[in-house]
Image (cartoon, rainbow, N blue to C red):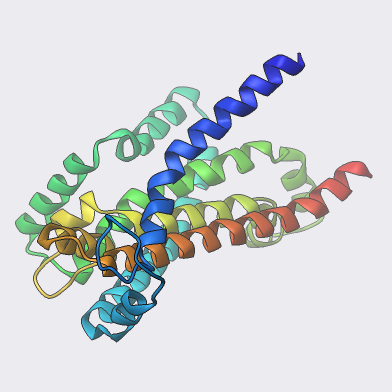
Length: 267
């Protein structure tokens, strides 16, 4: 038993080492004064100061976060509504069909999704830029929110809703005071997942972005094609650290929300 546990631990260490070694390598050389990724000559913050002194890059960062926050907020609202609608479908076959349609955007390749949105926006006359990127991010984030919220709805006992209605609660009161508080962990999970997906997306954004508007992922790709620059390392490091902060924030929020539920379950 101990031997098996030891080998499983070694396996996990090796897997995580392979996954994180390139990221660590990128982060270390973002402090290299030599200007290359071949030999580390000394510690410097020059590449970070170059990132923060680039006005165009700061505007792109602002665009990225505005798109991510707006798409996450709107997709969370739409995803919660969609999950509630799917939950209230009585027929099992209809519910499964709706879930299958919901999962299409998740399992479809990003290239196909991006090309489809590009054709759609061109046909209906939407100019490629802020609006097209926002609509695309909302579209592929909504199914993710539905998948995060729906399990919490399935965990909720129908007796809670029946009890609230027996006590005279209106439909709005049932929704706001019973259902939404119960599924709040799923809502937070969906919001943070949508936010992370929006920040990291490249393939879909590459198709639907236009001249004069860009996001961090597209900008990093464009700069990487022009040649190796350690400012790309610095920019990528900052983006990775921000993602880590989001994950840690979600962990603590989820942990704080799970404590009251555990206490109620213990009673």
